[in-house]
Length: 426
Image (cartoon, rainbow, N blue to C red; front, side, top):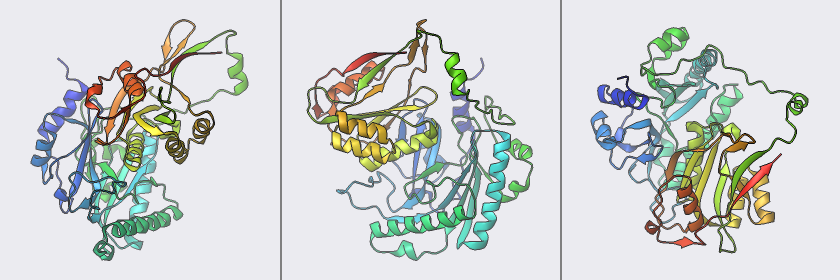
């Protein structure tokens, strides 16, 4: 019988060793992974080598596996940025990481990414006080360049918070110099001391290619030959030569194709907590520009961490991600969160109307056929037991197929049934 995608990934981890010798002290780094069910897990033990990593993973094999760019005196149960009760963590070191991705995935775009990585590496080694650590093919759309900062003064600053802020500020200045030279890199990675990156030796859960350490001389190698040296599972995707262009029809043509009297039907839920005056849950569809891959998950994970939310359930319709945090939050705070995320229209809607509606179903046409149905993909858990949760939106999650035991929540607010409506649109 032919093995499945997940079985092939599991077989990879059972038969291959993940080498961590490129890290000075792996035990000071945090390791995180996403399971096949979509749940994020953080290692509860220090990882020294492949053996201890496999023990930490146990039978819960990862779809995607990551490591922190920072090393900490204690990487276990690292407090959140806004956790004012815990002692501020001691930053020991922070790797300088440049993430070069050219989307969407294609051989032509990978060639562009390879050339950017080659030029950037030459620039950094000539102009910055760094020591080269590692270069990797990410397993998908590009490459990572990793360096050690040879200026150690900032890591000797006694105040832990001031130390981390100084490192972030210096990384922002470095990023600015790189961008001024015209190198296209992910602007969110380099200066983020709480960032995780894909672990070399792990399988990319969407492509089936291994995230693989490579020599910088490989940037001079023909791309096809380079990819031939990258391990992959049997069912790995076939990378197209060119990315398919998305052709948008002119508005006039689009109107001509609309059938008169055609309708669409969707189910929507209110973010308001029934039975309360000023309490809201945080629900929204992510912008199309966020995509639906690890980049989107990282943004949402950062949202939960920064705002110290309890947890968020993620659903996807293949184009965007539906984020549902069933927490009881003041309306003013949700207004601010949405505005900070760049969702000004939704933020203003909540501010003026005191609630808003969010699509929670697919879209049904007049023939009774459903399209773009959101499917559950993940839960990002912050383990915040102090949160007050919405009875109605916990009920919503059960209606969407997530088994929720309300008795496990100590603090609940509002009525148990969410406000749901059917909307008919022309």
